[in-house]
Length: 319
Length: 249
Image (cartoon, rainbow over all chains, first blue to last red; front, side, top):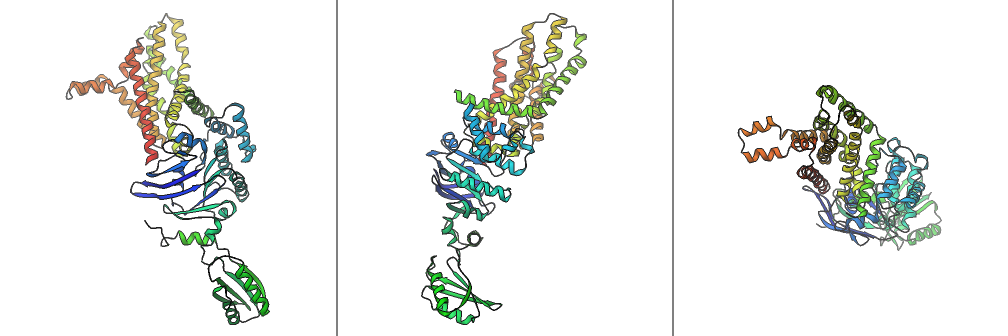
């Protein structure tokens, strides 16, 4: 549904977005991650046709956003970063306007407004003026505007920003539900959201795409991903380390002892994540008669991966 | 222009008008417009002492009244969109920028037209006291409405240039002031002394005054209609250029 090809945007001498390419298919929810100022919003503004790219192109549903904007824009629902709404209107008036401008009139319009209001939990403020709403309601009003025409493509810039934990949860559920038959891109810097919602994540840093994969693939890039940690009571640290190092599937082993227990971390030899290592460690512990009270496989932590690949001196794709 | 464009323009204009009447702006504007019109016409214009059965004492103030009131009515049209960020919403809707520009312009123009319509007691009074030329009164109103349209188009343009309403207001007042003065005799006299004739007449031809005077006299001339039409078209076109520049930068 969405294809982004070599997108570049220069603001004066500064290159905000540098050759960004990715695509989103129907039924996919793409999480768009990156530190502040990485170019997330700029990229989304180019996808929705608000600003033209310096070079490269965006194709939405077969229409080039720059050359054939109106058919492309019809397919898109967009929630801009600050969730702007016309403050001199009521929620109902604002949503009716959004529906009309999307070509919905009469009973189709009323139905669309009613549905969006229901999905975004706006019933209680329907006839209130937008400028009297709390931030959460205003945010959801703008979100309702983006889904009013049941678009095939949703572009949401920080849809959960400024919401309380319950509202965040509701919006995530909503995204998941929509994700089944729409192509969704949403930006966030809340990493748990990626795990909770996304089928794929793109990490962007200083205008470059630095990672593109499923949340599990990204987690696997963590240095400790796939390692097994084991906490043993009443056995010497040396013995634990020697035994663990002797396992065929084990790579590097580190141990530390604290308050009578030994905490060992075993990295897999081939750096793959599977149950094999944990199973081997458990069998060993059983044979040795260790009293262990913790055994778990580290899946890798997204926040660590995020930090390492978006740090100033980390790897960069070749220019 | 197809029916879909018209529908889009109407949707945008309707939203803008509803916005006016949902806020106090509309009422304040109308009340002040009517009060000032009454004051200028009857007190400064000496309407009764003139003993003339026409609207001159009323219409002669409009270029000056509009100079401040029209920019005040139109200054928020685009600057507010820019400040609040709804510009991003509007321009990512499946509409062309010119439809939004025209829709907003027409909404505000219709609003000013409504305020102008509410001055009808002047017409009633004049008809009651004397036997005025109805045609001249109508053409005077047409001229006044077109004048407001020209000022408004300037305001729409300056409003797109900045997110600050005050700056937009001041810029449009200055430009409209130039449009009044360009053909004023003291200004042309000042130029005659050093400028070549063609420059004097070019500058003077930008003035709204001679064109407005024609309407006041009861003459609806195609050239005057064209003048106001081209000022409006030019300014709205400039607005679209400004908006495109905003998005490109």
